[in-house]
Image (cartoon, rainbow, N blue to C red; front, side, top):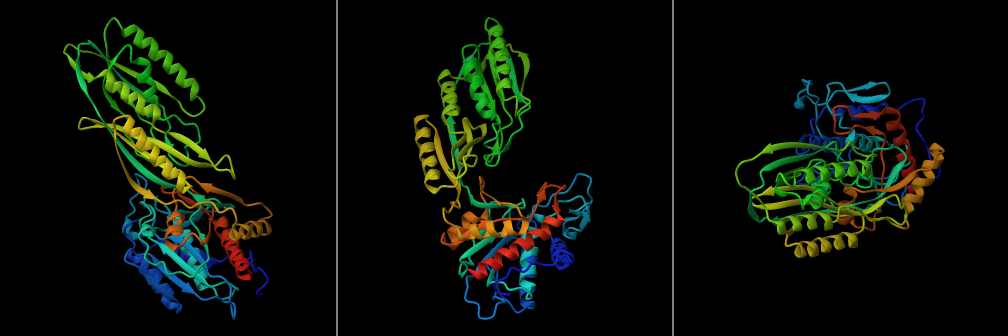
Length: 489
């Protein structure tokens, strides 16, 4: 048995695996409410005579000896997170404290009560429980690490105290597409920039409010390479084109650092002599931008006119020039791509929000990179630019990357095993977002060979969330096969 990969009989599905998932779904476990689920996992391990411990942040580590007599091979860390995002539909009467009731419908696992399912990352916890309970298969020594508070800032793994592990391989089970294996992830840093605003009086008697409409926005990591329009960058271009014909009294593009800006408003003032030229320039600019972003956006300008009788306060021309320069020169978009896959973004930056706060224009930016040195270079660039543009610059929320390994025995094992099991080639790629593997590499040591995989999930973090049942079963067989291959190493 030791040298042979043994799969579960497909004629007899592993019903215990599904029951484990249903059981943990009955335990309320949104981020920050992990006492009950972590205790449940400790009790589960204790009932099976396994060594288990929990740290002050509710992270749980369970050790299981190999089921192979006289085993001398490597230990494998199997990792996921226990917390979920709890959402419910507007018409749902579900109470959070009642837990989630799982139903199977049309080949998918769903919530029966109009809530999110919690398959992210409940499937990983179910896989882990089943591995802990199985003594019928030859498996290597396992360290099951279930972290807390992943969904809000990776807080559990960030503060992980359970770092005394023996594992030389780590399988993270938080991916959401069968057959796709992550081999790296981006680290990131948030940058706050503030530009002091200077004002002057103006006697222009006509005011227009321009609102950008029809922008789709998106995730500043996963969607950064899709060619989407950033509302703040559009505001900068508009300001540049209308500067000869209008004065500016207000700008607003609220959003989040980690989202592509989709809202933008400019309040501008002009005279009756310049009004026609201003409107012509705006019309020409609207058509130009609509053409440029026709494949990704349904862009349009909404103009609202207001007659004004009194003097207004507007930005000085010098301030407007600084704003234009800041928006133009601050990095926003793809900066570099990986050598292994030119379609994979390696480093990027995003301007996610621009608002006026107490006489300053505040920018919120998010930088990402899967290479430590490139992230450091991006921070240097932000510091140099902020100084040149007379802006204050502060960094926060720095989190580590998981760098791609040119040589990975675990990746080779996964490729071989998945091909033998499915008859298809696995996809190996990075993810341009932060996942727990970045902190795991930092906390446990970057000598650990890691991979991330999972079953097919859809509409995660929404009331429409669902998990493919067959994919759930198939991926456990793949995971078991990978573990058995490692045991032979």
